[in-house]
Amino acid sequence: MESRNLTRYNLLNSVKIAGLTKVVLLQVSPSVKYALSGKNFTLIEEISLSPRKNAVELCYRAENGKCVKPFEIRPFFSMRLSHYLRANADDIIFRAHALGGSLKTPETVCFFKGDSAFISKKKIKNAYYSEDKIRDGSCREMLFSPGFWKTDIKKGGEFRIVFSSGAAALSKYQKMNFSGQRLRRGKEFLKNFKCKNSFFEKLLLKSPDFDAHGEIVAGFHWFEAWGRDTMISMPGLLLCTGRKEKAKKIFRSAAASLRNGLLPNIFSTQANKASYNAVDASLWFIWALSQYRRNFGARDSFLKEMKKPVSEIIKNYRRGTEFGIKMDPSDALITAGQKGKALTWMDAVFQGRPITPRAGKPVEIQGLWYNALKFAAAMGVKDAGILAARAAESIKEKYFLKEGYMADLIDLDGQADKSLRPNQIITLAIMKDVLPSAPVSKAMKIIDEKLLTPFGLRTLDRKAREYKGIYWGNLEKRDSAYHQGTVWPWLLQFYYALRKPSRARFEKIWTGHFKKAGIDCVSEIFDADEPYYGRGCIHQAWSAAALIYTSFANGWIKARGNHR
Image (cartoon, rainbow, N blue to C red; front, side):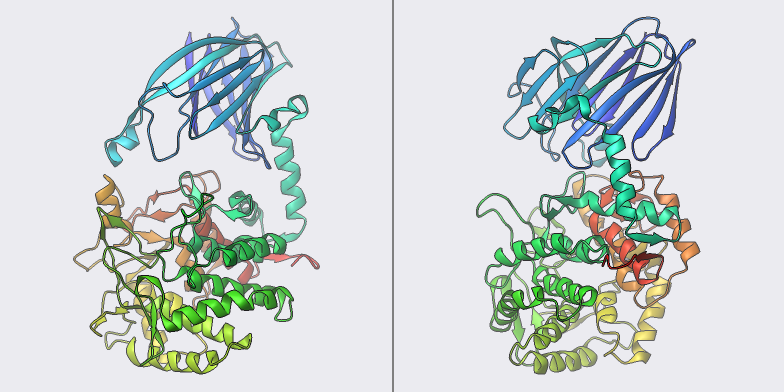
């Protein structure tokens, strides 16, 4: 008897089919399908995610013939949070019913139901994860199975199982067809847009994936909703695609979470658990609002509602707030820094030590601050226009180096950090109509030569002593490489604001990647050295958002009629 093991997020199925000799992948969208074949039979295995619920459907259909013997489907569960491995099954509570049951732990819950009687017979499996072994050594865990289904499918018949995080998803079990639902929903969504070809359709169809109960999930499989990531992702995922009401809901929720002018770096559903250690999250909030205005017009009534939180941010940044964040009155620029904290998006910290602390006046913060002041001035915030003009002059005076690019920051001693990093691209793009063209052109030429890769910008020049070209190994090694060379696609949104991309090259690069990580997904990061392997989360919000934003900006995707 052959055993077919199907790995899933948070569960593994062991499917034992006598006489199984061949497994062929048939499709990846709108569901994943495999053909499981033996001498005289072919079964189609289909895995479909619900487009609306936290649920997955597993279906087996007999295309021809009949299995020699009834086959067994046994699910194995880890029932844990994504950052941990299970050492035992002591805290898993199983409740059975005729066709399935439920599992519950302090962290999570899962309900499941199949087409025939569920046979309760517990089993423990010791799982080994080879990639986790390479990453940090934690690679074994105990998986729990409460029992199994046994089925005999004749030609034309099928056997279905649904796993869900909520019991309600199983209430209409017989009427479910997640694959059909996703297909219909996708077609309905695409009616609102004109795409150059199927590549852009695939890209666009990924935009709703990150919308979770009024938040934007930063990345799959292990990120939550992050303030910075949410705001950077907003234009590509929601504003360009016309999902105005969802965007407004997120803006309102973010505004309500402000504390002393700071937006949480990490949102949390638990009281007093939000993390505010970010100098840029509030400024990205205002940047996202400026993109809202760009998409929906300056007269949109929602913008008036946002004047209060914008004013609160400007006021607190001017007079000073937490983590040493304060406007320097001498040059109207923002300074920030606190020992043991990494306050910008380059936020890796290992054992209390920031890998890239960047205390002082980081270059991208100044561009975002300038944008915030300009936006506030347009809303009638007092003195904001005057401060914006002062900040612009200070940036021109202090950040362009004789080496031809912009300093990454001015440190707390007033010295320029000459590390060649991509953070300048944000300020160059935001202030492209203000900064002098000659130094901008020089900086772009150096960025093209030393930081640009097919998948984004390196976070550090390859000649730097701290440069790491491969993101791999244990946690210390990965954190040390995270912003010390590793390539980030989200920065392309700003790079392409200054360099018009080739559609043919753009398609070729990302079509190839769609087959290598998550299905039709854009990875969080890439190695800085060839062959540029995708790393980190397989499906990252701001990575996808950058490509969608670029596609709209270049007319490769267009909204139909009044959709926007």
